[in-house]
Amino acid sequence: MNFKSLSKIIDNSALDLFQLLKLLVYFLLLINFVLYVRLDWEIASYTMRNGGSLLDWTRAFATTIDESAWIILIILFELETYVLSDDFFSGLRAKLLHGVRYICYGFLVHSLYAFGIYVYELSVATAIADISDLCQLAGEGISFATNLVYTDLDPANCAILSNASQFFYTDPPEFIIVTDEPGLVIELQLAWVDFLEVVVWLLILLTIEVGIRLQDRSITRGMLIKALTWAILAATSAL
Image 1 (cartoon, rainbow, N blue to C red):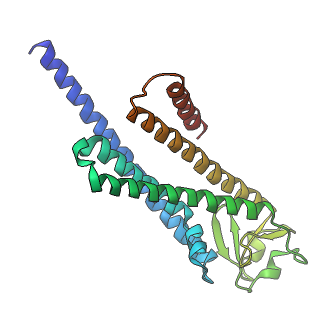
Image 2 (image 1 turned 45 degrees about the vertical axis):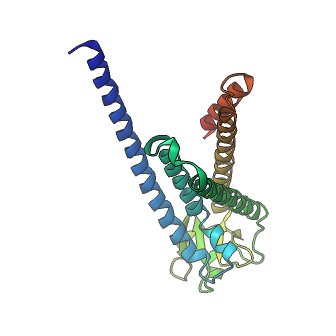
Image 3 (image 1 turned 180 degrees about the vertical axis):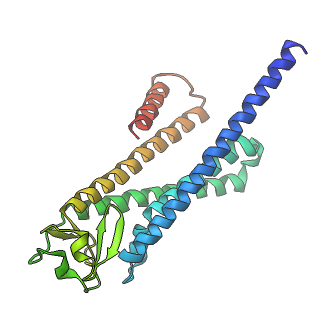
Protein backbone atom coordinates (compact mmCIF):
# COMPACT_ATOMS: atom_id res chain seq x y z
CA MET A 1 0.00 0.00 0.00
CA ASN A 2 1.52 3.35 -1.05
CA PHE A 3 1.43 6.61 0.90
CA LYS A 4 -1.35 8.11 -1.24
CA SER A 5 -3.67 5.16 -0.61
CA LEU A 6 -2.94 5.23 3.13
CA SER A 7 -3.56 8.97 3.24
CA LYS A 8 -6.92 8.50 1.49
CA ILE A 9 -7.96 5.80 3.97
CA ILE A 10 -7.03 8.06 6.89
CA ASP A 11 -8.94 10.99 5.38
CA ASN A 12 -12.03 8.81 4.83
CA SER A 13 -11.83 7.48 8.38
CA ALA A 14 -11.58 11.01 9.77
CA LEU A 15 -14.57 12.05 7.67
CA ASP A 16 -16.61 9.07 8.89
CA LEU A 17 -15.68 9.88 12.50
CA PHE A 18 -16.70 13.50 11.98
CA GLN A 19 -20.08 12.43 10.60
CA LEU A 20 -20.60 10.08 13.54
CA LEU A 21 -19.82 12.91 15.95
CA LYS A 22 -22.30 15.13 14.13
CA LEU A 23 -24.98 12.46 14.35
CA LEU A 24 -24.28 12.10 18.07
CA VAL A 25 -24.58 15.86 18.58
CA TYR A 26 -27.83 15.96 16.58
CA PHE A 27 -29.22 13.07 18.62
CA LEU A 28 -28.38 14.87 21.87
CA LEU A 29 -29.99 18.04 20.52
CA LEU A 30 -33.14 16.06 19.73
CA ILE A 31 -33.27 14.69 23.28
CA ASN A 32 -32.72 18.21 24.60
CA PHE A 33 -35.57 19.46 22.40
CA VAL A 34 -37.97 16.79 23.71
CA LEU A 35 -37.09 17.72 27.30
CA TYR A 36 -37.74 21.39 26.59
CA VAL A 37 -41.11 20.60 25.00
CA ARG A 38 -42.06 18.51 28.02
CA LEU A 39 -41.02 21.29 30.43
CA ASP A 40 -42.94 23.95 28.46
CA TRP A 41 -46.00 21.70 28.41
CA GLU A 42 -45.85 21.08 32.16
CA ILE A 43 -45.46 24.78 32.97
CA ALA A 44 -48.22 25.77 30.52
CA SER A 45 -50.59 23.34 32.25
CA TYR A 46 -50.38 25.74 35.21
CA THR A 47 -49.84 29.16 33.64
CA MET A 48 -52.31 28.74 30.76
CA ARG A 49 -55.04 26.74 32.47
CA ASN A 50 -57.44 29.69 32.14
CA GLY A 51 -56.67 30.02 28.45
CA GLY A 52 -55.29 33.04 26.66
CA SER A 53 -54.66 34.67 23.31
CA LEU A 54 -52.54 33.11 20.56
CA LEU A 55 -49.67 35.41 21.54
CA ASP A 56 -49.99 34.26 25.16
CA TRP A 57 -49.72 30.64 24.05
CA THR A 58 -46.68 31.32 21.87
CA ARG A 59 -45.03 33.08 24.82
CA ALA A 60 -45.78 30.07 27.01
CA PHE A 61 -44.01 27.84 24.47
CA ALA A 62 -41.25 30.33 23.62
CA THR A 63 -38.46 27.85 24.39
CA THR A 64 -40.08 25.15 22.25
CA ILE A 65 -40.48 27.59 19.36
CA ASP A 66 -36.90 28.80 19.78
CA GLU A 67 -35.49 25.26 19.81
CA SER A 68 -37.63 24.28 16.81
CA ALA A 69 -36.27 27.19 14.80
CA TRP A 70 -32.68 26.25 15.58
CA ILE A 71 -33.22 22.60 14.69
CA ILE A 72 -34.72 23.60 11.34
CA LEU A 73 -31.81 25.95 10.68
CA ILE A 74 -29.34 23.17 11.49
CA ILE A 75 -31.14 20.83 9.09
CA LEU A 76 -31.04 23.48 6.34
CA PHE A 77 -27.34 24.04 6.99
CA GLU A 78 -26.67 20.30 6.76
CA LEU A 79 -28.62 20.05 3.51
CA GLU A 80 -26.80 23.00 1.98
CA THR A 81 -23.29 22.05 3.06
CA TYR A 82 -23.25 18.26 2.95
CA VAL A 83 -26.33 16.42 1.65
CA LEU A 84 -27.36 18.33 -1.49
CA SER A 85 -25.31 19.74 -4.33
CA ASP A 86 -25.08 23.45 -5.17
CA ASP A 87 -27.10 22.84 -8.35
CA PHE A 88 -30.12 21.89 -6.23
CA PHE A 89 -30.31 25.34 -4.68
CA SER A 90 -31.56 27.38 -7.58
CA GLY A 91 -34.78 29.00 -8.69
CA LEU A 92 -37.91 28.18 -6.72
CA ARG A 93 -36.17 25.72 -4.39
CA ALA A 94 -33.63 28.35 -3.35
CA LYS A 95 -36.44 30.85 -2.67
CA LEU A 96 -38.34 28.25 -0.66
CA LEU A 97 -35.32 27.48 1.52
CA HIS A 98 -34.66 31.18 2.04
CA GLY A 99 -38.30 31.64 3.00
CA VAL A 100 -38.09 28.86 5.59
CA ARG A 101 -34.90 30.38 6.96
CA TYR A 102 -36.52 33.81 7.33
CA ILE A 103 -39.50 32.26 9.11
CA CYS A 104 -37.06 30.66 11.56
CA TYR A 105 -35.43 34.04 12.09
CA GLY A 106 -38.88 35.41 12.90
CA PHE A 107 -39.36 32.65 15.50
CA LEU A 108 -36.04 33.58 17.09
CA VAL A 109 -37.04 37.25 17.26
CA HIS A 110 -40.31 36.14 18.88
CA SER A 111 -38.28 34.32 21.55
CA LEU A 112 -36.39 37.54 22.21
CA TYR A 113 -39.73 39.34 22.65
CA ALA A 114 -41.21 36.62 24.87
CA PHE A 115 -38.22 36.40 27.22
CA GLY A 116 -37.87 40.18 27.26
CA ILE A 117 -41.49 40.61 28.36
CA TYR A 118 -41.04 38.00 31.07
CA VAL A 119 -37.89 39.71 32.39
CA TYR A 120 -39.80 43.00 32.55
CA GLU A 121 -42.81 41.46 34.33
CA LEU A 122 -40.62 39.86 36.97
CA SER A 123 -38.55 43.02 37.39
CA VAL A 124 -41.62 45.11 38.26
CA ALA A 125 -43.35 42.48 40.40
CA THR A 126 -44.63 43.91 43.67
CA ALA A 127 -45.49 42.11 46.88
CA ILE A 128 -49.11 40.96 47.25
CA ALA A 129 -50.85 43.27 49.67
CA ASP A 130 -52.20 41.91 52.97
CA ILE A 131 -50.68 38.45 52.39
CA SER A 132 -48.01 37.38 54.88
CA ASP A 133 -48.64 33.63 54.89
CA LEU A 134 -48.84 31.36 51.86
CA CYS A 135 -51.76 29.49 53.41
CA GLN A 136 -53.88 32.62 52.99
CA LEU A 137 -53.91 31.83 49.23
CA ALA A 138 -54.68 28.13 49.59
CA GLY A 139 -57.83 26.85 47.95
CA GLU A 140 -58.13 29.82 45.55
CA GLY A 141 -56.95 28.03 42.41
CA ILE A 142 -53.43 29.42 42.74
CA SER A 143 -50.15 27.58 42.14
CA PHE A 144 -46.82 28.14 43.86
CA ALA A 145 -43.70 28.28 41.66
CA THR A 146 -40.04 28.02 42.55
CA ASN A 147 -37.09 27.07 40.31
CA LEU A 148 -39.45 25.98 37.48
CA VAL A 149 -41.37 23.62 39.80
CA TYR A 150 -45.10 24.34 40.04
CA THR A 151 -47.44 23.04 42.75
CA ASP A 152 -51.16 23.62 43.26
CA LEU A 153 -51.71 25.29 46.62
CA ASP A 154 -53.95 23.59 49.15
CA PRO A 155 -54.27 23.68 52.95
CA ALA A 156 -52.20 20.50 53.24
CA ASN A 157 -49.06 21.76 51.47
CA CYS A 158 -49.08 25.55 51.82
CA ALA A 159 -47.06 25.63 55.06
CA ILE A 160 -44.49 23.20 53.63
CA LEU A 161 -43.89 25.06 50.35
CA SER A 162 -42.76 28.34 51.89
CA ASN A 163 -42.44 30.03 55.27
CA ALA A 164 -41.77 33.47 53.78
CA SER A 165 -43.83 36.54 54.65
CA GLN A 166 -43.79 38.24 51.22
CA PHE A 167 -45.25 36.79 48.03
CA PHE A 168 -45.43 37.91 44.40
CA TYR A 169 -47.58 37.13 41.38
CA THR A 170 -45.43 36.22 38.38
CA ASP A 171 -48.17 36.11 35.74
CA PRO A 172 -50.10 39.38 35.56
CA PRO A 173 -52.91 39.89 34.67
CA GLU A 174 -54.00 36.29 35.35
CA PHE A 175 -52.69 36.22 38.94
CA ILE A 176 -52.77 32.45 39.33
CA ILE A 177 -49.02 31.84 39.85
CA VAL A 178 -47.36 33.02 43.04
CA THR A 179 -43.83 32.78 44.42
CA ASP A 180 -41.89 34.03 47.42
CA GLU A 181 -38.86 36.37 47.38
CA PRO A 182 -36.20 33.64 46.92
CA GLY A 183 -38.33 32.10 44.18
CA LEU A 184 -38.67 35.47 42.44
CA VAL A 185 -34.89 35.95 42.49
CA ILE A 186 -34.35 32.52 40.92
CA GLU A 187 -37.10 33.10 38.34
CA LEU A 188 -35.65 36.47 37.35
CA GLN A 189 -32.14 35.03 37.03
CA LEU A 190 -33.39 32.22 34.79
CA ALA A 191 -35.37 34.71 32.68
CA TRP A 192 -32.28 36.88 32.20
CA VAL A 193 -30.22 33.84 31.18
CA ASP A 194 -32.83 32.88 28.57
CA PHE A 195 -33.04 36.44 27.26
CA LEU A 196 -29.29 36.99 27.01
CA GLU A 197 -28.76 33.58 25.40
CA VAL A 198 -31.21 34.48 22.64
CA VAL A 199 -29.47 37.86 22.15
CA VAL A 200 -26.05 36.22 21.83
CA TRP A 201 -27.26 33.57 19.38
CA LEU A 202 -29.00 36.21 17.25
CA LEU A 203 -25.74 38.18 17.13
CA ILE A 204 -23.88 35.03 16.10
CA LEU A 205 -26.49 34.38 13.42
CA LEU A 206 -26.20 37.96 12.18
CA THR A 207 -22.42 37.80 11.90
CA ILE A 208 -22.61 34.46 10.05
CA GLU A 209 -25.16 35.89 7.60
CA VAL A 210 -22.96 38.95 6.98
CA GLY A 211 -19.96 36.66 6.47
CA ILE A 212 -21.87 34.55 3.94
CA ARG A 213 -22.98 37.67 2.03
CA LEU A 214 -19.37 38.89 1.89
CA GLN A 215 -18.13 35.52 0.67
CA ASP A 216 -20.81 35.55 -2.04
CA ARG A 217 -19.20 38.78 -3.21
CA SER A 218 -15.76 37.09 -3.16
CA ILE A 219 -14.68 38.99 -0.05
CA THR A 220 -12.80 36.39 1.98
CA ARG A 221 -10.01 38.46 3.53
CA GLY A 222 -9.49 41.79 5.20
CA MET A 223 -10.25 43.51 8.47
CA LEU A 224 -14.02 43.07 8.16
CA ILE A 225 -13.75 39.27 7.82
CA LYS A 226 -11.35 39.16 10.78
CA ALA A 227 -13.71 41.33 12.83
CA LEU A 228 -16.63 39.00 12.06
CA THR A 229 -14.57 35.95 13.02
CA TRP A 230 -13.55 37.52 16.32
CA ALA A 231 -17.14 38.60 16.96
CA ILE A 232 -18.38 35.01 16.52
CA LEU A 233 -15.62 33.66 18.80
CA ALA A 234 -16.38 36.29 21.46
CA ALA A 235 -20.11 35.58 21.32
CA THR A 236 -19.73 31.80 21.54
CA SER A 237 -17.30 32.12 24.46
CA ALA A 238 -19.93 34.17 26.30
CA LEU A 239 -22.47 31.32 26.16
